[in-house]
Amino acid sequence: MNYLSRMAAGMAMFALPTLAAAQEAVELNLWTIDDPGEYHYVMADEYMKLHPEVKINLRTVQFEDMVNDLARAVATNSGPDITHIDNPEVALFASRDLLLDLNPLIEKSKIIKVDDIYPGPRASVTYEGGIYGIPRGASTLALYYNADMFRAAGLDPDKPPQTWDELYKAATALTHAENNVYGIAFSAVATESGTFQFLPWVQMTGSDFNNVNTEGAKKALELWKRLLDEKLASPDTLVRSQSDSMSTFIAGSAAMAISGNWEVPRLVKQAKFDYRVTFLPVPEAGATRASALGEGDTVILKSTKHPEAAFAFVEYLYSQMPRSWNEFGLLPASKVEVANPNAPVMYAVFEESMKYARNRGPHAEWRRISQAIQRAIQTTLTGQQDAASALAEAQATIDGVL
Image (cartoon, rainbow, N blue to C red; front, side):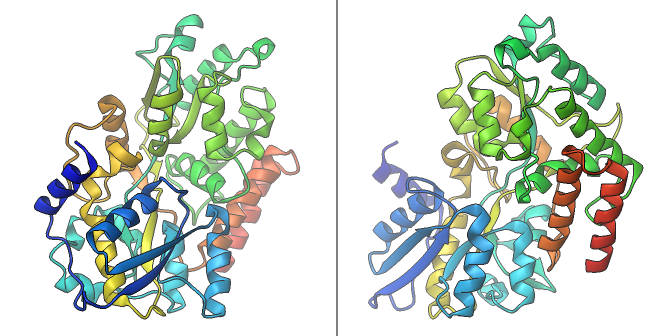
């Protein structure tokens, strides 16, 4: 289906919003973590074609810089009308009365139905009864693996690791230092990505972000350290992003990788081997599954001079949710049908994983909580502290915040 046909079909499926003052030109500034050709750029271009009276100026901000750049912009009254915020950060900005409460606009909307948004994504935009953003999609983590390498190592690719012990044994069998091939790739970087990757391991043991000084969390962190100490994972795991970890896997330098559904489009295009995906392994058979709830939310700053125009664009984003998987590698954040999903087997794994995906927080001081967890990861994996001491120190910081 070409572009114009797809647009016609989209307009037939959804009652697209109409600006109250369509004859008046409106200019909106949008900040995003996307690059040209990616989600927000594609959507903004489409929307401007459908609504010539609206001009959307886009600015790409690096993921790790968004919160600080946005805070500085707000302080100097130079913030955008609309921006993308990582889901645990919505509470931070909402608590400081910087975001527009969308409830009054949603109540009048014929497109956005809050009850149709899945509980996890809905909780990420909810603060003290207000709705301060709309999820553009969702993401979660799973275990990718190279089935060809499994066969070469005598492992059954139809029986991927289900427990932490099985994961460790598989990583050992799949590591070939002489060929610069590691058993597993993941990200333990001292940013939000490190927290994102680590928390599911803690949550599988019955702990959570507010209770990390536990035997279960200690066991999880010690497993990560063992993978590094025994060189089953690359030393640069400490500084490598999730994207870099996946690049290692796609290049054939890692037999397994922990990453999210957003990597599926890249994997399909670039991988030259039999790749598969399965659920994150659990501590032991029968343990509760967990995964991370990722992706961000589209929010409108309270300072905008065009709240209705900004919300009309947000409505358009929401109306295009059925396209999120096939075109952008995002899981739907609401109850919509994805017709003929690309990579259907992988889609089914990630869709099921969403049932176990948990929020980071939400909490207005999430950054301080996350940084305490990041310090515990880094000091343990670099040998500065043992896991128990590092997690006890993190807990003391978290208790102070909470």
